[in-house]
Image 1: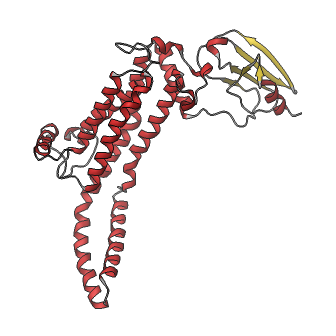
Image 2: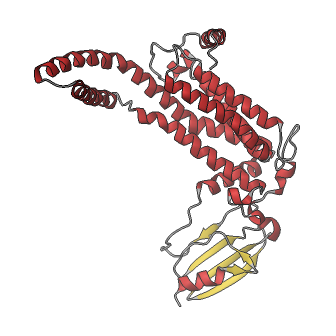
Image 3: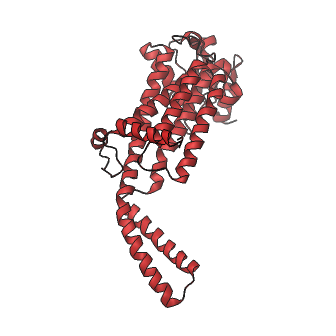
Length: 359
């Protein structure tokens, strides 16, 4: 039997405890593996594999973090375990709570603000820069479109093209020109989607990590309750939500109000909304309201994260409309930019409300 098979066969279960973090190895490797049920077992296990012989001894508890440590005495180690994004977020939240001694409610708020500021905000700034560049190139594109329309009409008359053929030629050439201009200015529209992808990815990952901590809905969050559940969350809240494992009704309401406000702020822009923008607005309103009942079923820890994340998005969205902030972030000046955002958005709101064009 090879050393690798012997190692995996022997550490599959020790003292009826399943180990979560195992790495592949060759012989002559020394491992210090954290018992993942640390809250209940309070012990470490030292495993040394030498010459196809597994040496095992129990060590006293010297740390209280969820993870593992590998000490390599040889140079060859294959397939070192890499934690998933959910496990990484879990570890970071736990280290922030344990390392600085702050309560869980503050840990969730602080980590959410940092996530929105250092990970999401740069993508939001990039989106604003791309949108500004696209708007700046619109004058050049419109000028070329008028010239191309005249040229295409002359060629169609000379060649006897039908209206369909003329439209196909015009569409193909204008599309190629637009792509060329966007590539030249480094403002391809797809780059505006980066912020949405980052938001969805971080939202799902953070929600799953917090969900595993609460031990609620284990099948939904992939929770190993005896390993992932943190009892300190039962008393880690504040104000009216002292228990972060139990659901709440006030936080979901705040979450819904924040989301609706964010959609409303997005819609208050210069000029009328296009048909696509109107449909997107109604869709976002529906999602914002529809998530409230879902939030009422979730633990307060998750709802707190959702609410703080939405509030951060609302604040950053408004800040990115202030001209001085936009210049500070090197976002180009464009005609659609609001000089006095708060005043202009209030006027747009009054006009739409009085004309019965409800958002």
